[in-house]
Image (cartoon, rainbow, N blue to C red):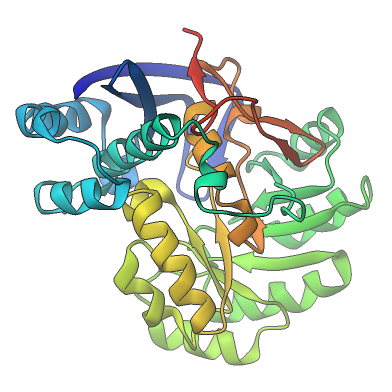
Length: 337
């Protein structure tokens, strides 16, 4: 097997702001694995909150290059198990390798990835489109610029209720709210009560992950369902979210790829929780991989390529929230830059 690393820096269409930071550029790393004349692609995103930079990702992967290249690809799951001891402290790097292995494996079978799993794609959920924190005027402008059936609204300001009220005046779309840990108990309960009549479907990670007592109270009293994000990073976090959240948002980059994500989905459903996968502003490489999990999901946030001013790949297309798969084996992603 041959390993190749492709670092990129992609510009956003608009400055992307959440409760804790703003950014204009998204650094990314694409991993290519080649075997038997076929190449699989995987991707991971730079993220300062988790102390993950592209140089660190490349250094950690290159440190184990000879071992990775010595492995034959039997199944992606076995490949992941071989690599996990080496990358258990860097799930972002493991994710890119795992996605590449799944893409390559499906190509070796000459099947789309969802076909390898025997899934029915006829009832896939629609993806939302994210409106980052900005002035109310600018958030309305972004919404009008991109008509969509479902929006994820980033919040964490002193004007959160006013934002949702004003956005509601301009669309009948479903709203999902993501506070990225910015609220406390009283604020969460107050906002949830206000949002019920404003067409908000659920609230994602309203409070810091460490505030378990507060989250328990919110879970018991919230007028809206609550979805875990920062509280659900890896497999062992799923059961910890039971009784604190109604569902979980799985980020492939954070949990280590498709292999653990599928186990997390199974575990969450066994616990009676809803399941979502989220975006880390990936290009079409990572987004195409997420698309094959859609038949398992209740909700999906895979709008990464839509937020970027430029893309590096061709693969899945997203039209009015609906995901259209590329007519290629594997995940369907190919690099165009």
